[in-house]
Length: 397
Image 1 (spheres, rainbow, N blue to C red):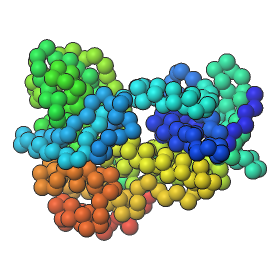
Image 2 (image 1 turned 120 degrees about the vertical axis):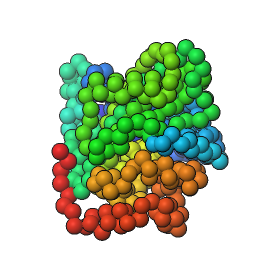
Image 3 (image 1 turned 180 degrees about the vertical axis):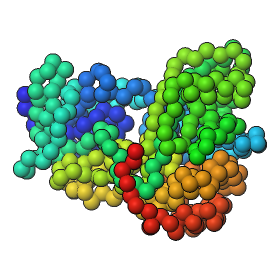
């Protein structure tokens, strides 16, 4: 079966749906929005499991009606147990579940007349003056979609060559306690009251839904992931010995791995096929946060497509200065020159939380970046900066 459309979006996750919404939303009278087709993998192993996205923004946001929870304060625990509790000013830290977001966006796309096709994509390539996506449906029937542009959000088969590649890997439990155990007004962004792995960084993460329920995660930054038993052991220790939750039940689990790399992700393949989302470099290498960058990336790309401009002219979502700072931090953490737990705890203790979050989003000025840099271990950071040009980029193991 052959289908023709203006734009094909591969993947119905945060990146694919956000971009499709931006492209297909109605234009003023007399103008037609580009026809978009979204290709979603059939139910099975190619579809990612449900997951939680977190981000921060000022004021009311477009997805506030879909949020599971939000907070106006962030809390960190230093390794010695010191509590760093900071208000976010005009910002809020927001929690969004993927299943709710995807259902709402698919319903909206249906209202825009966008077709969502279930199809396992086998290839996407330029063919003359078009881009062609070939695959097969759940029934086994072959399908081919022809369009002027393709935006592909599928995870890359291999990571780009890099000087430093760490993994942010985690397991989270949605827990319910028998007694009130959580402060629903504050999210714990990093809790370093945990044993630190050699050559890595570990912390707890607590997103309270109410006094009795929360998402509790154990996270590591390191070169390799753990086995399932190790995550379970770490979470039991965190819930029992650190948080002292008492009796609790685990109602749901989630797990993930986010590459943290100074590699440069290719933004296109050929003339008409572009990568979006994490595949297109939306993940901030130093933190793993992606959702906010996806929204900015989708907005810029959709504006270009609707105006008839080439998406190739849309700048990278994370600028050179931000990527350079991330490369230095990753190198300093990977070599062990910098104690990550002490670094993050110190930053949040001496820099306003709102400014730190803007820094993590790449929204601070050069002067603000310089001021934050002075509050890090300067000499280890300088040594990492100086040696970066001497390091070879290699394929991550």
